[in-house]
Length: 150
Image (cartoon, rainbow, N blue to C red; front, side, top):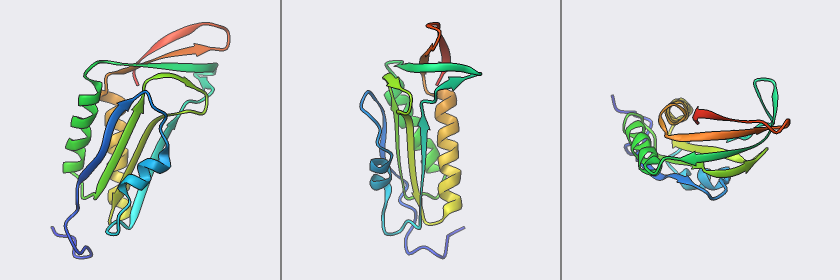
């Protein structure tokens, strides 16, 4: 069913879908997807927190499979094709991150908020479940552990 409130069809553009060692700046992702047709820009930032299962965390190291960049592009393109969104930008970090660093960022623009929220949530959940990235957490007591797919 056509959305009669729009002047044109949703753009369904993937502006960025990367796995990167570079810092993620959420505002840059949002700026990439902003456009005149979009009445909503929804963002998600996955931040490195200072705890996991009641244990103090001091830092994380993300390692990615060599196919991770290709995989994130494929996952995001599939999700964008299924939603009435205008543009999407996604980035997941690799390497050593400190508490407070952005590990995963998503920005979605759409004509309406419900479309943007739905696509953003599906991207976050799908990438978390399927992207071949693993994290190695270091705890305050000096111990460390690998955690499955990030």
